[in-house]
Image 1 (cartoon, one colour):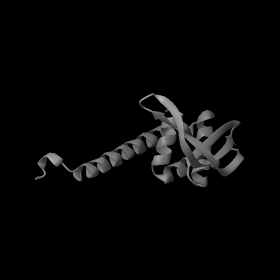
Image 2 (cartoon, rainbow, N blue to C red):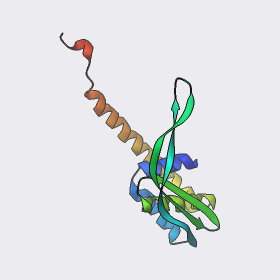
Image 3 (cartoon, rainbow, N blue to C red):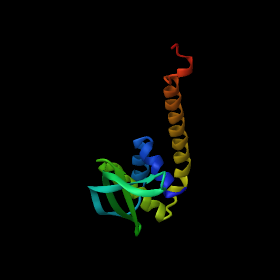
Length: 140
């Protein structure tokens, strides 16, 4: 599973999943916190569709962390003030880079969580579409 997809699942999904995965690594392997979770700002890029050009729409608050697991460095960056999640993402990232055996078992959990997220989005979209006004059927 690609890093971007995995990270999106962990951020959007159940917060306990990232916690469980990272704790399974913390208790078994040596690790070191390189950069403790800290807040910062980053610029957000957007694409202007008419000219197809990139521009910066503004800044957003992020929390970032870096850890080392089995001589592999992992980074975790998340929007908002979420120190625990940033650290958990960094640990999971480092575990994947180190190709630890636990990561193979995680794929199933991540795919199940992705399906749950997709179903929740579909349900929300369905609820929103029920409130849609059809102007063609309104009396004038």
